[in-house]
Amino acid sequence: MPMEASKLGSRNNRPGLVLPAASAWRAIFRDGTVRQSGDGPPAFTFRLPSESALERLLATDVYSAAMAFVRGEFDVEGDLAAAIRFKGWQPRSSLRNRLLAVIARSATALESVFQSKAQTARRIRFHYDRSNDFYRLFLDPRMVYSCAYFRAPETPLEEAQLAKLDHICRKLDLQPGERFLDIGCGWGALLAHAAGRYGATATGCTLSRAQYEFACARLEGRAHVLDLDYRDLTGRYDKIASVGMFEHVGLRRAPQYFRKMAALLTPDGLFLNHAIARPQDVEDDAASLFVRRKIFPGNQLIHLSETIREAENAGFEVLDIENLRPHYARTCRLWQERLTANREAALRVADEPTFCAWRLWLAASSLSFEEGVSSVYQVLMAKRGSARRPLTREYMYGKAGD
Image (cartoon, rainbow, N blue to C red; front, side, top):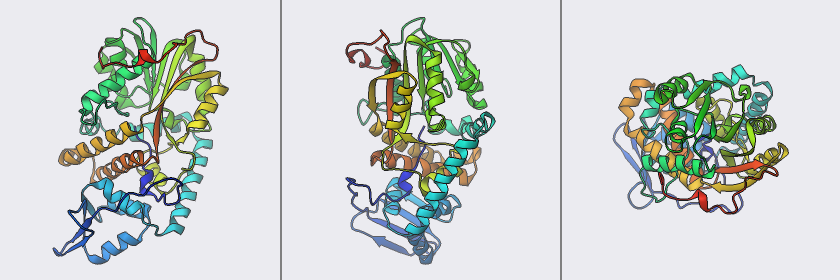
């Protein structure tokens, strides 16, 4: 799942980043008057009460603009990501943006120090226990809530998510009868694929009660699902996958996390860590504060170098790294389009502010991945010195279901 919406914030000073051309846009006011900016058809349209409301929107910081959107003070029709890009690149209210960034970083530090297992569970449930019916409105039928794998730009989301499940199992060289563990198993799609397609003895864990109940009913005994914190797991597994869960761990607990993975993995086993990461020059900002308050309390993204460092300190060696950033950009864009198209159904299971917050977050996340402010990496690891090391990576690739 995407964790950040960093394109809500300005990145004007990032070295090497090429600014996109400004889109034409328009504003329609309550009295029917229209204001147009730029040439050609507008990429997006602001709907606001008045000209003065537009001026306030243009002048305010990105956090305040996001909160105003959630409160319904204005709406955006058309390409929401283009509207976010337009607002995010405006070099205004920089002092307040810096203040909000300080608040966001302070909140991250405090959360990492005082986060107990009970607090972790509450934060997980805040996001994932919203409503299974809500997630059905924008996810694929398998309910896969992580980056899809598109073999072509026009690949349907359903097919791309199946390809992602297969890509993970292939990277792990999953074999019949092997003990497979999915850390943070979501609604059980990867467990079902590992058990059904590859014949693995599959186990997953989640702290979301809604996901746990859904996965248990879905799997009907074909895999074992635990309502359990990963830190309380026992046993040994031949293959382990952690997909979209590491973002909940944070830098402070990364050493403990990788030590636990090492303890759960057999000597010649394989471990795949699939997680969002930031470039070295990106830190918490006003957008991070919005995401933490409205979408994902307690999340923290770290840099790839920090992930590798902590994994190696726990005794792992890296066998393969793949950046799926363009895939997540498209995944988030499709999710946002699906959610927007299902607005009426969404408002039957969530209130208007929630719907607006998620729509904004998914659009901003797609833009963040498109422009390289966020990346997502699959890191395949083995214990250092393990005899199980394929000589090439050819075994990883093929058509889904082969």
